[in-house]
Length: 109
Image (cartoon, rainbow, N blue to C red; front, side, top):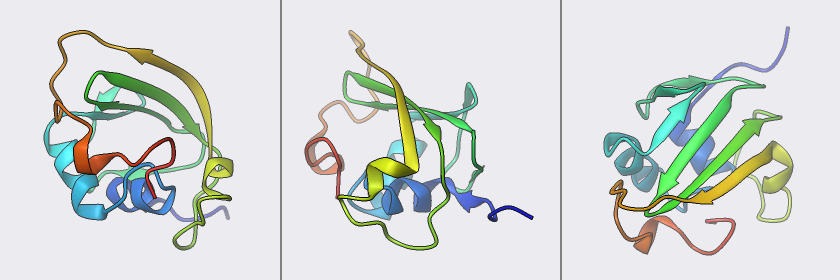
């Protein structure tokens, strides 16, 4: 039996992709996160090998989940939880227009 699935908002926080769970919820509510090419809610469950598309401002990141953390990962360990598949700049997108408080550099923690 593998690791249990984890709520999307908690995964985003534990993996340092966003600094706070509330920020992850706002991002999901704005339509900025997809799991396996389907728009996701904060309460959606993620599993190993799921593909996430995350849009913050005009920056879109696509990643594959490699590991489900048991708790908050350190900034150093967090990138080992996922594989960055691609990153691009999208013109004229809105989900939370400015990265502002959702994004603190490359890791978010």
